[in-house]
Image (tube, rainbow, N blue to C red; front, side, top):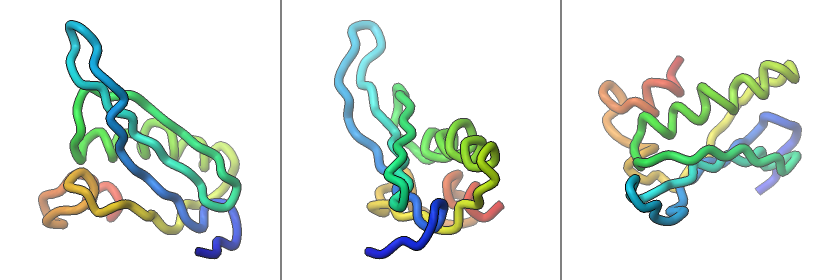
Length: 97
């Protein structure tokens, strides 16, 4: 897949990071800019659309804003945290903004 410049295509996925006693399962949300190979990660205690959108809102978009770059496209594995009914799915709603 060819990318032309920073922000042209970002890839996001969820990984099971392990289990922490007293907390439970820990998941890592990972975002990678496919042009410059910059990765941004954040750990969560759940795997859903809200945390997928939170990574973008809390870390990814501020990073791009700081560098005056627009994020144009997103690539995911279409897991349940990224894909759903557009009108009711938190991640889909966030991308529509």
